[in-house]
Length: 268
Image (tube, rainbow, N blue to C red):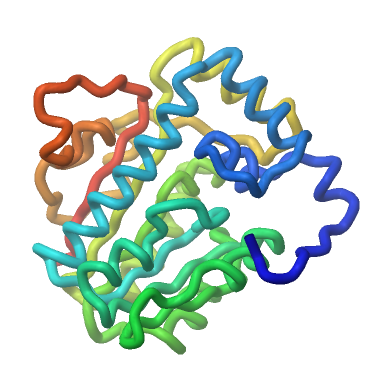
């Protein structure tokens, strides 16, 4: 927990927050009754949502280990980071590369307050920083990130569970394209989002929006592929997250498929 109390406006206790609902599904403690009610409403239609949240965090950890390890990427731009929980990007990256530089981006005041209190370097050589910016404003993200990251060297750009909050697919693709246009060749794009995989998922998305949280717009796997246009896909491509390079301990088991897909692509 933060060392000093975080004071919130009254509306934060009356309206659920997507970051806090996600924190609830992950088993975190930085959420309120209104968030738990929203999370439970979704789970009533789609019980796999808790599994999805945890599999997505495991996917993040595996992908960041690959990026920092086999692919040798030292810089990470994590857009829409959400509340700190476990296996945060900087912790995973700096465990592999002590000098890894990680920039988190979010515009939720409670996320930023918790991040500044909880997300600190795990190594003396590393850099961990935060940008207060909206996913709809990639120019601000790029401009502020330039103060911390070297855009002449490869950067891993991460959009995990955030692009579904951009209603228009064309705008979401434009956001990704504008950020990738700014980074150096050899950079990577990491995307994860839930997909329109059946009636229960669509009903859960409806209940999520009805709770007062920003609506999450489900897309097809084919639409997610469009974010990687012009990139070189890293094996195994865009797949269900539990099938993306599962850990050795997962061999011989079949993880529950939740409809969540993720992939990693390299900018030529």
